[in-house]
Amino acid sequence: MKLNKKQSVISPHSASILMVIALSGLLATIPIGQCADVQTVGLWHLDELEPNDYMVTTPDALGYNHGTVGGEPSLVEGKFDKALDFNQGSFVYVPIRFLVGFPPTPEPTYIPISPNLDIQKELKIEAWINVKEFTNATYNNIVVKVTRTGPEIEDVTRVFGLAVKPSPEQDGKGVLSGCVFTDSSGFNEILTIEPVVSLNQWMNVAFTRTSTGMHLYVNGEEQNVKAIEGVQNPVGSIINGTEVYIGHDSEVIIDEVKISDLAPEEVLSAQIDIGNNTLIAIVVAVVVFATAWVLRKFIQTWVIYSKSRN
Image 1 (cartoon, rainbow, N blue to C red):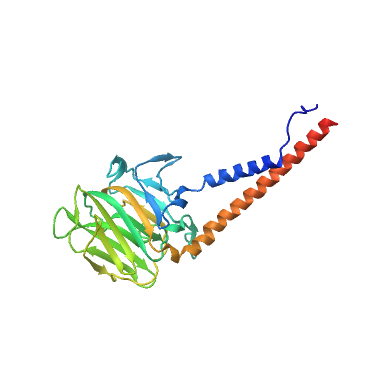
Image 2: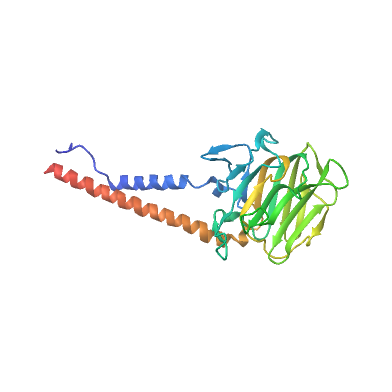
């Protein structure tokens, strides 16, 4: 059966358009976070809970580090729009790498998931919090990154974190805690000297580790601190971790959590070797596939068109 002779074939111009569309589709799937502040590696507004198959997630605005919700925290009115209300048994879990190869294997194996949360040198953690009450946990965690060496709860080491602790001196007041674990200085923790955390009050809190040491801030103002373990200005690189938790062991409402790498240029080359090379490989593969598909379609259609004229 002959095809209608008026049926057009795919021109080289049309083939170019198809490839552009294919590449546009690929690039459209790249997270918008690639255009964000280069220092920001995680930004959780905590104003959404999204059912996702057998779990519930809360998105990272950058598109990389979506959190899995545990223990049923609830959405409430926040400092900005909605926020998550945590009780002591609820949390948000963000994987960095999965630990596999539990015993009897001699060494655990780590599968990378989101290594951009492995900040090496200078970092900042910030959030809006409204503490409902203090718990008896050692740390009322706002944000904590840990490294896991086994399946048990005790098989974790704090890597960096921002937390609240009840003040031993004043009921209903608390102090801020910040910590980092480095490959040279081990574990280091600072506390605010004064009890700066009040109950049932929105406040902006932040922790930084920079070349000048560890610092804590409340509503943008730096607080006087003391080192209760290690030193205030530890040396060395922050060790890698396996996961981040938000709101763990706390009775608190948390809004607008942000983690930043304040010295991204120091690890930028390693990140480019991973991310950009992968992206280039994907783009090249798509171009090759799209070109082959278009040429194949062009030849098939041209053959059919030629036969229809004979």
